[in-house]
Amino acid sequence: MNSDSLIGKFYQFGEAVLFLLYVNFLWVLFTLIGLIIFGLGPSTVAMFTVFRKWVMGEHGLNTTNLFWQTYKKEFIRSNGITWIVGIIGLMLLTNLQYFSLENPTFNMLFKALFIFITFLYFIMLIYLYPLYVHYQNTFKMYFKNALLIAVYQPLRTLYVLAACFTLYYLWVTFPIFIFLFGGSLTSMVVMYITYITFAKIEYKQSLLEVKQEKEAQQVNGKEWSYE
Image (cartoon, rainbow, N blue to C red; front, top):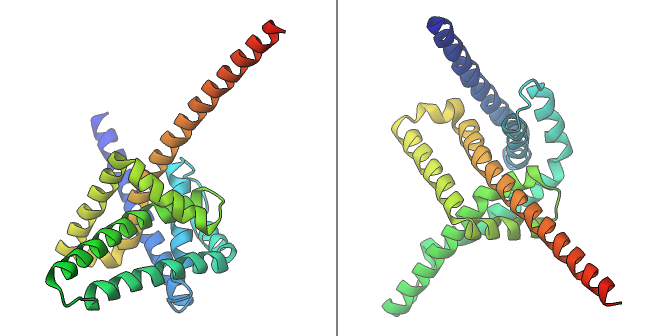
C-alpha cells in the first residue's frame, strides 16, 4: 500500500513537471510567434489563465486549446496593458540609472524615492496579471486594485515576495531551470498565492455585505415600527 502511494506521488510529481515544461514551452513559442514585443503580453496572460484554471481545480482541460484561444482573444488588450507596464518600468529604470542632482543630499533623497516607487511598481506588477485573468475590469482599475491589494494585504504580499525571491535564488543557482520552466513555475506560484488572496478578500466582502443587509433590515424594521 505504501509502495503504491509512493508510486502515485512520483507519478503526480512527474505529471506536474511535464505540465510546467509544456506550459513554459507554449509561453516561449507564442512569445516568439508574436516577435516578442507583440507576443509577450498575450502569452503571459494565456499562461496565467491556464494556471488560474489549474488552481481552481480544473485539471482536465485542453491546455493547448485554452492557451491558443486566450492568446487570440486577449491579443490586443493584453498587449496594451503589457506595453503600459513596460513603459513605466523603462521610465523608472532610466531615472534610477541616469537621474542625478548636484546636491548630494537631494540626490540621495530622490534616489531613495525612486527606489521606493520602483518597489511599489514591482509588488503591483505581481498582482496585475492575476487580477487581469481573474476579473473583467478597466486598465485603470487593474493598476489601482493591484496597488491597493499589495499595500492593504501586507502579509499576503510578503508571502508572494518571499516566493518570488526564492524562485529568483533558484534561477540564479541553476540557470538551466529558467529555460525549462522559469516562466511557468513563477506564474503558477504567483497565481496560487494571489488566487487565495482574492478568495479571502471576496469572502470578507461577502460577510460585510451580509452585515450591511442585516443592519439595513434592522433600520427598516425600526422605521416601520415607528410608523
